[in-house]
Structures are given as structure tokens and as C-alpha cells.
Length: 445
Image (cartoon, rainbow, N blue to C red; front, side, top):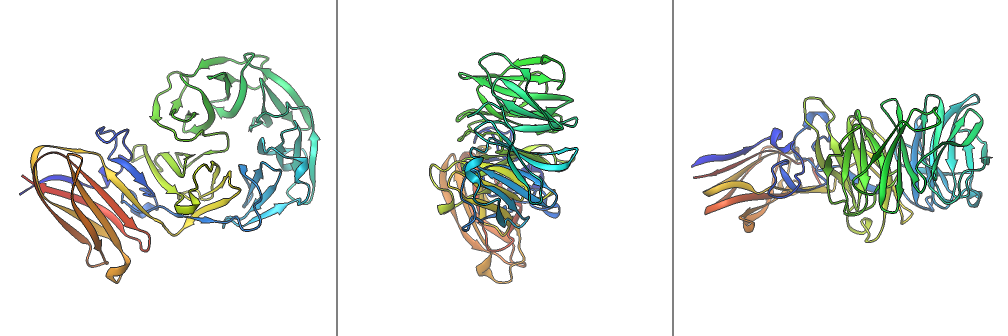
């Protein structure tokens, strides 16, 4: 009997593959597995944080945008609610009773002018309001933006830039200019980000998308790029831009030339506010889970994984999960809102996670057994549960559930199946303990 495969963290850290036979990743599927849950466990197969609903009786609408100011997070909902949220995910409604004067949640931005740092919010009537982080709210501080369109905003060189239909508006101190830049007629701005000393403006028109690069002060934009598909949001990623397509579309990177795909098959439209970037990692919400692309350390190549999700009744059919914001600088802890008017936090605990490897080539070999090495602090067998299933040539061969402890941490599964061209392993880790998988050996002839 010889060792056919010896899978270790360096193999796990290839992340999600583009398909079950494609070897650009190690796994054809991953749910709630976080290869970067904490620094001491990078590369181990460990369940991600568990979602906890924080809606209570406080959250009354869909939070479409989050920002952070000081030690608090702020959310803006589509029915006009403004929320102040602690790092533990506890929300408070701000300026209660005046929501009807600022509906739409078209944009949210923290901007410092001569009076200090303030929270600016753009509604669906073309108004810009502000909150001074004390007691003042002014829902019509500035007027004149286009109504009924999104107004994502970003601060660049001391000026706030705001998407405004086929224009970009600026708020420079207290001066609003609604048409600081006009883009190609017929195109509507959907998102805006700072990109390599330019402003990158994403716009769409009847199924087509463009990116415009503008220096922020010239009367015209500097560069214009046609995208290969319709896209709806942007996010920074290192020195590149990530671009998010429509349902069935792709996540692409842009550095000023080509648009390589890093993830295909989007199941939901990713809109402005539904993405994040931190610790050299890109995040987006797609259907019922948060995906990530990147790596928190230069010693590990960028990879795709799905460290966080919603389960059961929380992952309701037809609900759109949109705005997200990280609440921790190093680990995958997040806040999120959705179209069912709910607020979730991922910051502790675990659901349990599962993954399945790609089809590993065997070239007609006989597989004798699979050995799985685990880590757990469980002291009794009933608290750390591992489910393993072995598939040969796409067909189920054998499997079962094992209960592990700190001392009983090796699982042997007899296979005894010959003439196999591929083998794939499904692994499920329960959420009641800190169970992790650190190595998998496959033996045969």
C-alpha cells in the first residue's frame, strides 16, 4: 500500500475551483469553511463564524449602505431609517419619526468639511442630508441631484464625488456642483471608487457597461473602457478594481487593460454597498453567502472561499442580501442587511461547515483507505462530529460519521475499491466544537 495523495494546508489553500475537474483550486464546493479564521489556523479546514440575527424590533427596512465612523457603524435603509450600530451588532434608530423625508437610501458617505466630520446621505428625491454625529439632522442640506437614481459616493482629495445619473456631482466643502463631469450620453452611473489616483466610474446603458477614469477636476474624463458584460458595482482590490456582473455573470479584475474573471456564475446582482475590501481581501454577498477572494498575508496566494453564510429560515428564498461591512480588521466578521428588513452579524460561534474536493485523478488505481487528521479541544466524543463521504468516478463508495476528541483525532475510512479514475472527498464539520481538519492521506495501489 502506497500513499497516493497527501493533502495538507498548502493544498487546502488553493480554495474553490472553477469546476469539479478543474485543478485551479482544491474544492468544487465550500460552505462556511474559513481557511483564515484566525492566524494560528491559516490553511486548516475550520467552520466560519455563525450568523446571528440582530433585527429585533429596531430594524424596519432594508439597509442598503453601511459606513463606519469612529467606533460605530451606520446604516441607511430604503424607507429612510438611519441606524447607529455597535461592534456587537446592536442597532439604534437615529432621528426616529422623520424617515419619510429621506427615503430611498441611494448613497451614504462620511465626509469632513470645515465644520468637521459628518454623515451624508442621499435620498431618492435628489436631496443630500447630513447628521453631525451629535444631535443635528438636516435632510435637505443640498438639493438638485437627479431623483430616482443611485448616488454612491466617495471622498477623493478632500472632495466628495457622487454618482448622479449621466453625471458626477461634487460636494466641495459646502459647494454642490451637480454636473462636475458628464459621461457618454445614455449611460447611468452605478458606482464610483478611487483607483490609482483616478476616480473610476462604472456606468450602464441597455445591457452595456463602461468604466470611465477621471482625475476629479478636468472638464472631461481621461479614459473610457468597454466592459465585456453588464456590471453593477465596483470594489477596490490591492492596486486593481473588482467589477461585479449581473445574475449569471462574473466577478472580474481590472488594472487598466484586460478584465480577467476570478469568479463566474453569480446567482444575484451585486450592487453598490454589497462589497467590501480589507486585509488584502475582496468580499461580496451572493445569494445566501459571503464569498472572498484574496489572502491576508503575502506568503499565501489569493484564493476564493465562502467563509460565511445564512442557514435554514435565515436563508429565505427570494430575499436579496445586499449591504455588508467588515467589523474586524483581521478576521471574517461582518454586518449585513437584506430585503426582508433584517440585520445580521457574523462575529462568534460557528454553524459547522462542509466542502468537497475536486475529482482527484487516479488513473485506474485501487484505493485502500483514507486517513483524516483533525484537531479538537473536545473532551467527550459526542461534541466533535466529522462526516466523511468518499466518491469514486463520481459515485458514492462509502462514508460515515465519526466523533472526535483532543486525543482521538485520527479517522481511518476503509475504501477497498479498484480501477478508479478519480476520487473526491466530502467533509462536514459540526458547529458545536472547534473541530478542524489539518491533513488528508489517500492510500492505495
